[in-house]
Length: 113
Image 1 (cartoon, one colour):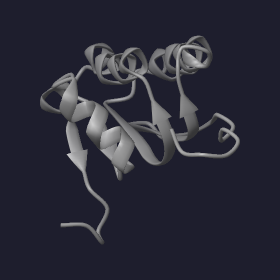
Image 2 (tube, rainbow, N blue to C red):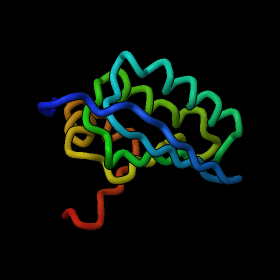
Image 3 (cartoon, rainbow, N blue to C red):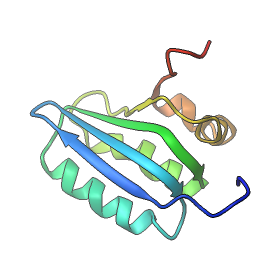
């Protein structure tokens, strides 16, 4: 984790008929996981075709929360894969180390190779 005070967790959802985009900010850990799960349950009740997570502003993520996010795709009617858009370096590292990166689609930020 980065030095200094932890970033507050926030979740913002933009839902259309086909897509649900979830913008996550701050630290995603066991403490905020129940709140995130609750948000995802409400979002998935609307039966979006695609679930997109914008994770550019995530400063920490634990393995359990990463698994929750990736497995949320199982509730989708499409191919069951979530799209993780603009993962921060820490998110990308956790997805790679846990091999969860192979279970979702990842869109890197335009400025990165």
